[in-house]
Length: 108
Image 1 (cartoon, rainbow, N blue to C red):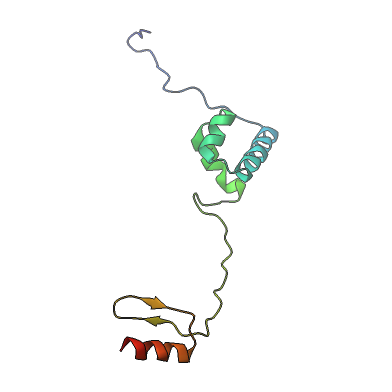
Image 2: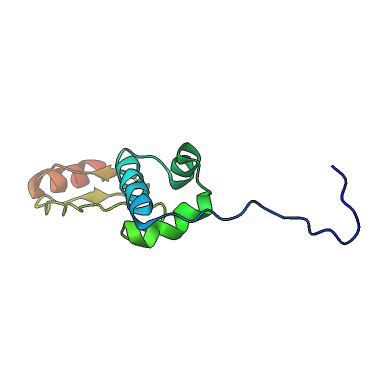
């Protein structure tokens, strides 16, 4: 395609304006797709949107940070049995105090 001197050349297609209802419907679809584990980029391509548009709508979707998920941490159970770590790096667990003492005497 040839252009003449002084002609205005569009760099990209015009931005599409969406009504509030259209945008709400798209955001609802995006929430559903995110719940199914899809990435924002995959969602954008699937819906025919620019990925940057979907990223910019992220605040309306709850403002989640990319790559992070909510987790629940379980506290480790306290151990009552002693743990022996030798200078050579061996770790011995599950013995009571008498068993540890016997092992240390046997190892010399």
